[in-house]
Image: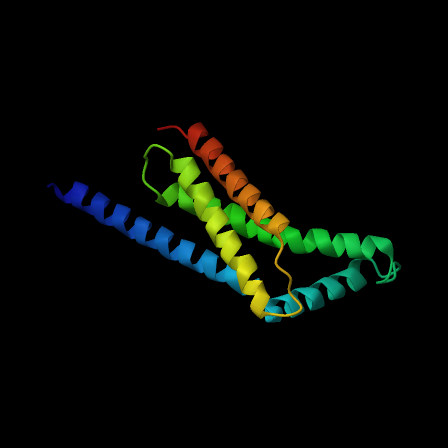
Length: 152
């Protein structure tokens, strides 16, 4: 093995290691976002942002509840997009790779929803798991699209 190829192999191993730890950190963030503490932090951040940007609208306005719901779901959606992207870059090429990654998204999403049972007032919902799977799929699609455009 030449010195250059040994260096490339070390770099490839290091990148794989970083991706694996990134996936672990992403799953930890997903699980943390399912806790009551994270819910309170997000509510405070949302309320502060709402007051700062839309002070003329009262917090009890119908648009407040809808915007809050969309913001809450968007956080999980983005986390699962990142999760799908990281998995696509980490899982080796193999038949059924996309289905395996979507299964991972479904499993992590289901676990995150089950975790909410232990953190009142959080409420687990099947539709949230579907949103999580969609986020994973969009992350995979974006990554595949980006990588297919890269010159070799």
